[in-house]
Amino acid sequence: MLFPPQALDGGPRPLAGGFTADAWARIRFLDGPVCDGCGVPFDYDPGARCAACLTKPRAFDAARAACLYDETSRDPILKLKHADRLDLAPMFARWLSRTAAPLIEAADAIAPVPLHPFRLLRRRYNQAAEIARPLCAMTGTPYLPDALVRRRATATQGGKSGSGRRRNVAGAFEVPASRVKQVAGLRILLIDDVLTTGATAEGCARALKAAGAARVDLAVVARVRDAAGLTI
Image 1 (cartoon, rainbow, N blue to C red):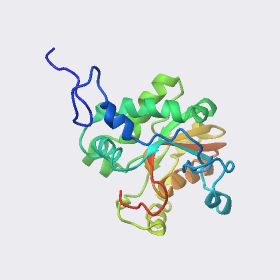
Image 2: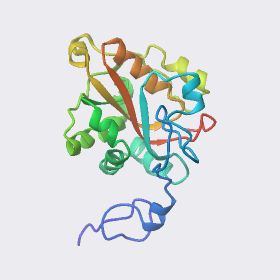
Image 3: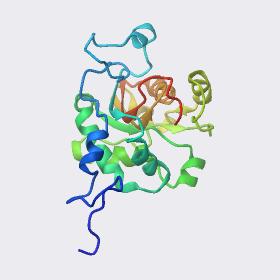
């Protein structure tokens, strides 16, 4: 009575916390056929991988995204990332538990894409970790919060081209020596908020595989339709 649930999209008050029916209808969930390699949606099912992944395979083995990154999904994602809306993280975790169910089932452990300590100090939390933690709790998958570290304070990826993003995160990630035995031989599912070019996820995957990880998959809340959408 004192604190009734509010709509996350600012619409009419719902019966329970979440989006209004109109907002749910506008979110473009990726329930149809997608590329097994990068998660990009297909208009029809031409096969397991898109042309880009067949031409140049990713460092991660497979990826899934819950929805497309667009004008509807952008606002709640940025609120979690920059506006202290940690209450949104469990909802995003539920989305991933559905869209990435095969990857979760195959994973030995779940790890978030890390922030550099300076950025973590400034932001006070890692949005990927806030999504990964409840996802592990609801699926029973072991959580590896410190399997990866970002050893170099990279500039923000926003506004950079695909090649610029790859250069920006080159060599930025590593598995600490104290965690190599913990990672070796495992199938690890990486968690992040948004997939654009995949440069960050590939940097993480390379570091994990260099430490002996058997397989690295990726699950994100949203992804751009193609690399032309570099506006994050």
